[in-house]
Length: 258
Image (cartoon, rainbow, N blue to C red; front, top):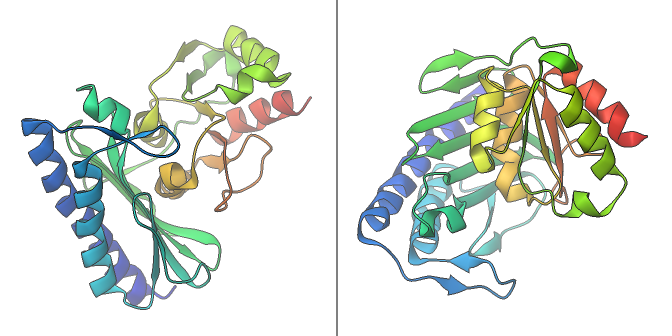
C-alpha cells in the first residue's frame, strides 16, 4: 500500500470510528433492546447502525476495497484490499453497562494486516497504527515496555474457555505463578495497555479475527509481538492470541508449546 493510499485509509478509518462512536453514545444514553443471533451472541440496533455508518465512509474513501463486517458479512472479494470491521466489539459489556467495548476497524492487503483503528468511546481513548508508522494513542506515540523477565511481567487473560480443556491450561498456570501479577482486563483494553507499556502479555483462546485485527497492527507497531497461541501470524481464520513484549512473548510461546 503506497503512502497516499495509506493516508486516505487512515483518515477514513478514523472518521468511520468517530461516526460509529456517535451512534454508540446515543444508544448508551438511551438504552437498547437485545436480540440473540444464531450463535447465541447478543446484537443490538447500535451494532447494526454503527456498522452501516462505518461502511458508508469506508466505501466512499476506498471504493476498490472490500468490506467484511461483523453484522453484514462480506461485501466483495477477500483478496486485495479488505476492510475488517467490528462496529461494537464487546456487546455483552455494552448491554450490561460496563465501558469495555469498542469499535475495531482494520485494513488487510493481500492477507497482511496493514492498518488498525481501535476506538473505545465510553472508556475514552482511541488508538491507531499503520504498518511502518508506529502506534498512536490520542495523538501521542506509544511503545511497549522492555520487560524481559517473567518475574517482572504483568499478564492479562481474556476469553480462555478452550484453553481450559487442554494441556496448555497447566502451562498457563505456571506462567501465572512465575509472573509478577495476573489480571483479566479483556476485550480491547488489555491490548491498549500492552501497546502503551502498562502490561506485558495477553493470552486468549477464543476470539474472532474481527475482534483483534486492528489491535494486532497496533501492538506490532508499538514494538510488541502478536501471534496466535501456536506462534503463527494473524489470518482471517485466527482464533487465539498470544501478544506481548518480545522477550515475554518468546518465553510464553516456548512454555505453551511444550
